[in-house]
Image (cartoon, rainbow, N blue to C red; front, side, top):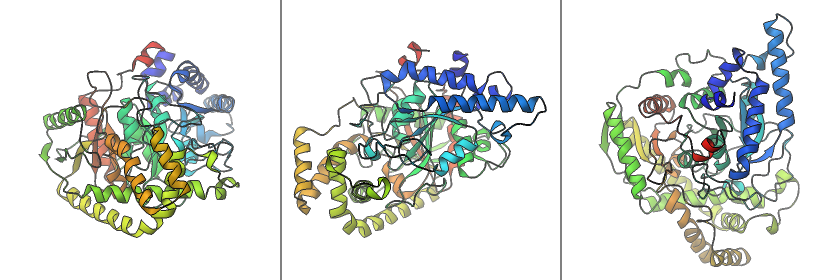
Length: 508
């Protein structure tokens, strides 16, 4: 059964359960077995809820048997749901699961247990997904790599010396390692697309406002929930379920799953080789872009080279301002969530420093940052009135090595000095220098969080060292259907579902 498990996506597994070729209990037992086999190597899952998941699966199987025998089922709603019985993981950040710890990769939050489900969690449960654990993130989702001090580094199944990206790094590593076919993820600066690129997976950030949120939007309304998956259709169906299409027939016209099944008409694609907030693109990223442009052209799409003509320095400053204000809220105002006052020893020094930058500079700079956000939104909207889709890099290079972006001793000393003496000049210098490393690698995704437009990373290219290098496509607000049609076409032309990392092959 384990080989069957790896051969199917979430929709395929749900079909096995529906047709009684497999039971929900069999699926969760396999997912747990795979977790125990591979998680020690990748450190993707930081909280396990095995017993409750097994009980749910057994209960669902009993309900299914009762229904098939014409008997009363205790809960037939879940039994008949779209993804009934499929094992699922929730990112340990910003998506509370009632009764399960939500540490957000932080020592301060490590004992925080929410009382209510986030909307995306409630909707996942209603879809029949069986949540059995939570995946690792960097502390408070602050970094594009997943190396929280609280849990240790999460590793990439394609090469354990490399990062799976962040902040949904644990989600991507778990999917790439074959623990689950799709996992919950969220994206405030690239946190779905970056890990998808690093791990050879599909990752779609929906349009701003598409998916209901657990809390009021933060500064700039940058973040949104969705998933990382092995197949395009899984992401499409989950978006239907999260965005309010759950009552419509699966794959019906006008649904996202329906769009993923429709032919993709020839598109006018703006081919952008700008490095965005990074200083330059590596040879790997340029090769991945050129390959994607050639593939799209061969499929009948019109490819037109375009330079965005954006003041990327201003965009970078605006994004960092909004990011620092969010850090301030989660760190310095943490007492409103956890009930106890935040202490310096409870946070990593880089997170603590960013929070203080937010307090000193962010709030004062917020009006200018929001005005720059409006400008970039208008600029990209104008571009996407002329083109159907933008093609650009997801990352400036292939997945970096574990520890490569950790602050140096000198940088840590500077961070401590800035929090002790919050002088504006020192804080501005720290904000610039501390972000240079992150943007040099992961500076290609943030513009679409600022603009709110949907964007996806598609796994079409692996470099000479066997590491995945995704490419990014973006569409106008509300244009997820266009992206899903294109993604499904690319998936059919260049299948990636059966590409398996060495770890997955070795422990199948």
